[in-house]
Length: 125
Image 1: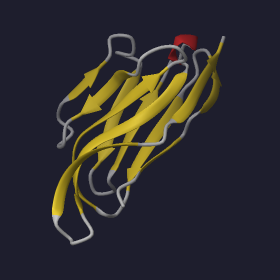
Image 2 (image 1 turned 60 degrees about the vertical axis):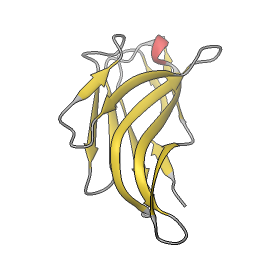
Image 3 (image 1 turned 180 degrees about the vertical axis):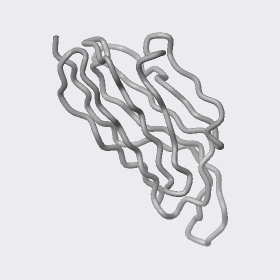
Image 4 (image 1 turned 30 degrees about the vertical axis):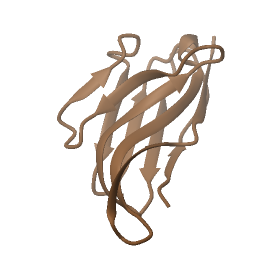
């Protein structure tokens, strides 16, 4: 079963830092583009940052440029989001997303897009 498991959320004061991590399950054969999204109460889910399979190309929302950094470790099937200079408006549930290939029950390789369960980030003013 394919799973993406996030960790690292929490409560931090304005200006503080947090590091989110997302680990993919062992049934995955390869990970392509991965990203972090967030959803604040009453708002739509939005892309925060994305990184290509090789890690050479990244993309950030304008609101987090210069403050957040996305990275990945393909050997460990993980992606991380380092968040610095946090602001109250960064408060949201953060979700990991990945385009990937996995083995199904018959060990065939299948493509898929998966989400993690989400982790709460709260920035107090």
